[in-house]
Structure formats: structure tokens, C-alpha cells
Image (cartoon, rainbow over all chains, first blue to last red; front, side):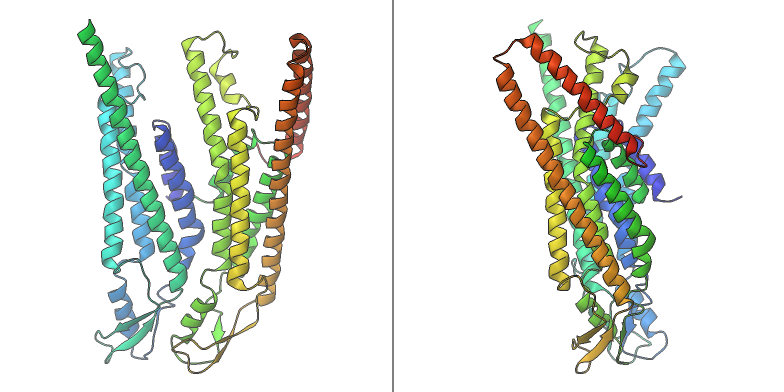
Length: 219
Length: 262
């Protein structure tokens, strides 16, 4: 079980997406998943070992690291990627349900089970709203947990068993900050893509509905 | 999810590229991505652990390392490779859109559609003309820009392409000026120069491809302008002959390039 599973999952979703949805999948693959695996993971690999405090008191470094990094950036990033990709499964499940229904009744119930209309449209819109919501939740979480998106190179720690206030140095703070900003930028890009897809679908189907009603009135 | 997935995505684009584009893709995968994964990552693997400063002051090493390496070479290269590969996705999306349109035509039973079944549409290789030409040319243009920007960023951040053995650091909390020693400086310099050289080759290949496409475009335009005065039948025969020759040339090139099945 690895990131390849997520990749296969998203490739399956791609089939039932709109054009903007496919761009979203490409952005998630190239700029988030690939960057995470190829570059970001290695920066945070030895973060605990390289976290150094100006003290010989045993336990002080552990306690200070735990206080300043309750959940590591890289773990939050991984969670965000997984959570944000999951709502698309709702669409896949709904299409599978439609195909199953057709098989059970042994007749063609839908013009095309993968066509975004009716119930599938609602499912698709809900998945878009969930995706956007989760992105925003994680961005707010990052902001609140780490007091903004900055990583200082020095933190002052005075938790027991550290005697008085101790200087603790974080490893590679500039590199971590660059990748954090990259994460925020790609998150915002994905939010924009989701919102445009949402407005596009709502606009398209309201025009369709309006035209249908207009034709009926004419008749 | 790793570079292999990128290989799968870009391999699909390979079918619709020019011969120079196929060479570029080979160079990208063999001389850049493979070297990065197999060799360069090992060289930079112990980067911070083996960065040693001549002081016992805790924190001094961390601060000096951060000061001299704001972003590691290996990460910059990974980002460069990702950004440089991304424009090819534009071409992949355009091809997918065209295929989708042809499938729709086929399903409607349009007589203009020349394909006998959907499998043929899936396997078809699109010629680089019309709107696909514009997409393809813009993707090459963006590739060039990204390559140049990253090379400049490299040069700017590290004051050239050499890795020094010794760096003098006086950032707080280091007392006075402290000597810090980089691990494997010669090996890192060798790989840096290698990656820069291959980057330059890729830039040259992109420039050559751009010139080739522009020349082809202007030749086609002048041919059309000239032939509009001649008889239409004669023009069609010559064009189809030229098309067949182009297909033969590009197919033979496709067979000689290693490792990419579509």
C-alpha cells in the first residue's frame, strides 16, 4: 500500500470528470503528489535527529520538539493529500451503483452511466464542495498550528525538564518554508479549480433546465 | 507514485511528438531522471549529517547549513524536472480532447468520420497541425522558459556551479567565524556540471524543435499560397506524397529511439 494506490484511484476518477476536473487531477499528480514523494519527504526525513537544543539535559530536546511540532508538516501534508482525493470516490461509487442497477434490471436505464446528470450531478457537486472544504480546513489547520506559514530557525523552549529558557535550532528552515509556500500555492490553485468547476456545472445545468422549461412552455 | 508514473504519462505524449521531441524525452529520462534517482540522490543523501563545523556550539551547524544551502541541489533538480515535464501534459490533454471529439462524431454516425471502429480512433496518431501545432509550440516555449529560469536560479543561489570544500560562517549562535566543511564537494561538483550540461543539451534540442516547427509552418503557408493559384488535383497528389514521406521518416525515427512504447 503506497501512493501508487492513490494514483490508480485518481486515474479511475479521471474517466468521469469534466475538463476542469481532469486539470485538477493533473495538478494533484504533478505538483502535489510527485513533489511530495520526490522532494519534500526527504527534507523532513531526519527532522527530529537534526533538531538541536543548546543544552545537555536529557529529555529536553524531545520535550521541546514535541511542543513545537505536535504534528509534523509532512504528515499533515500527506493527510491533506489523502483527504482531498477521497471525495472523488463518491462519484466512482455512484457510477458503479448505476451500472449495477442496469445489470440487475437487464435493460438500459441510463443513456450513459458515466454521464453527469440527475443524481450523479448532485454527487459530483457534493464531492466538489467536500474537496474545497477539506482544502480550506487543512490550510487553516496549518496556519493555526504553526502561527502562519513561517518556520523560524530558532525557537525558545522552557518546558520541564529544560532548566530556564533554552535555544533550540530547527534544521533546514528555509528549505522547509519554500516547500510549505509551494504547498499553500498548489492548495489555493486546487481550490480555485474546484470553485470554477462548481460554478461551470451549476451554470451549465441551470441553462439546460431553463431551456427545457422554455421549450415545454412553447409546446 | 514516483518518476515511473511520470514516464507512463509522458510516454503517451511521445507518439504525437516530432523526432526531436522524442530525442528530448529520451535525454530527459535517461540522462536526467535516472541519474538523479540512481546516483545524485545517494551523493546528496548524507548532506546535513556530514556537514561538519569546527565548533562544539549547539545550533551553529544547523544555522550555517541553512545559510549556505537555502534549497538543496537535489530538490532544485527534482522541481526543475517536474516543471519541465508539465507542459507536455498540455499536448496530452489536447490530444485526448481531439480523440473525444472524433469518438463523438463516430457515435453520431457522421459520414465525414473516416474510422471504422473506436479502437482505430484510440490508436490514431495525430499530426501536429492546426490548433495542436499551437499547443505543441507553446509547450516547447514554456519548457525553454522553465529550464532557463531554473538554471539561472541555480547560478544565482550558489554563485556558480562549483561546490567549495570549506565555507566560513559567522551566523549567530556561532562564536566568531567558524570553518564549515561540505561532504563530498568534488563528487557534487561533477554531478552539478553534468546536470547543467544535460540541461543545456535539452535547451538546444528545444530550440531546434521550435525552429523546425516554425520552418514547417512557414513552408506550409507559402505552399498553400502558391498552390491556390495552381490546379487543386495536382496539389493534393503532391501533398499526400509529402505526407507519406513524413510519416515514413517519423516512423523510422520512432523505431530507433529506445524504450518508449505508447
